[in-house]
Length: 293
Image (cartoon, rainbow, N blue to C red; front, side):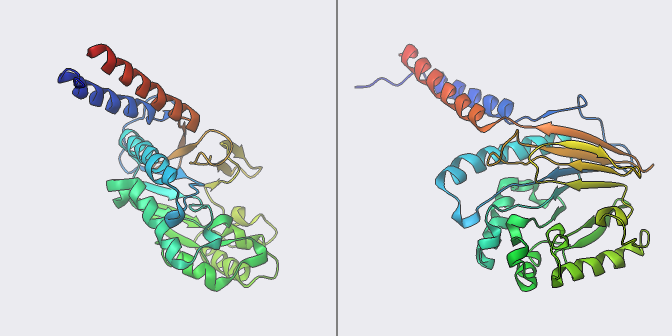
């Protein structure tokens, strides 16, 4: 008959596993420890390229990657305390191929990853993997996607204000397409919004024409901070997934009442580090059980 290890060992192993997962899922961030929230500040967690598969997710996605990503989000939100979450497109890996029902399953998968933090205000923009490229970009299809995302109109654009900070989200895919009805719809949206900011100058780069305080983009796989000639700051947010090259990460943006923006770039463990960590834990657990008998 096989003897079970000492009664205290399972409890110790469970505690060790929780501590290990907490350490593994804690993000590393530039700028030292997070500062306390100042009065009137807005702190936004900027993520991109989640590449979720919804109902097409594999067992590895559901029982490993989603679990680890849930830990990443939970620890990041608890540590950095953002007021809202912004997804800069490509929340899905194959959204341009998905039916409306499958698209809804992607949104539900993301809400499951967020857990109880899904109550945070969030803005989700559309990327080319969500709606397709110029060759197959179609208004009705985009509308079926956008209507399930709060704050977006039928063209996939949105504008809202929170804590006296104005956000404008553009369907950047449509702006790349010549002679496309969606592009004309996005241009009309920008002209409408430019009355609130500054009249659109069609000779300028489209995002710069709105005279923003800061521009956030994504889809290059890495973080960058660039200053345009007119003084506009442009931030490229890294991918929050293991399915692209580079280290997964996100950006925390703090908007204060004086109009300045403070950024923190945070990065997460790579997938092979996580896998090796769990394998090492399993081996140490097996060794501990063997030695305790």
